[in-house]
Each structure stands twice: as C-alpha cells, then as structure tokens.
Amino acid sequence: MADSDDATDNPKNGIALGLALGLPFGAVIGLLLLDNIALGASLGLLAGIVIGVLVDARGRARGSDE
Image (cartoon, rainbow, N blue to C red; front, side, top):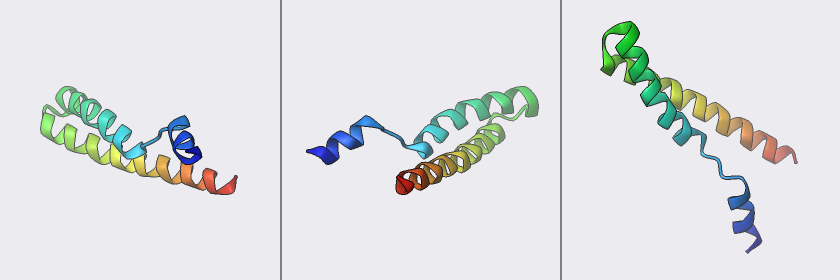
C-alpha cells in the first residue's frame, strides 16, 4: 500500500507532458512562422520529446539522490 501512495503523491510523466504541449505549440508556431502546420507540429513533437526525456532524467536523478 505504501508504494502506491508514493506513486500518487508525485505523478510525473515528462514525455507525455512534452508531447501534449509540444504538438499544439509546434503547430501554432508552424502555422504562424513557417506557413506549414505539419512541419511545425513535427518540430514541436521533437522538442516535446527531448524536453520530456530531460525532465524525466532529472527527476530520476533527484529521486536516487534522496
């Protein structure tokens, strides 16, 4: 029971958050700056994945230090 309580106290999934934010922001940037929504969405997904992996790695590194 204690393990499930710890998991619900700090729910993080950096990759999912990066994808969820990267796709729409990339699409908007692609539409406004590049006039190509698909290219913008692709770049947004790429940036979201990279940022999500970095956030996950940093969170795991902090968790192992404690």
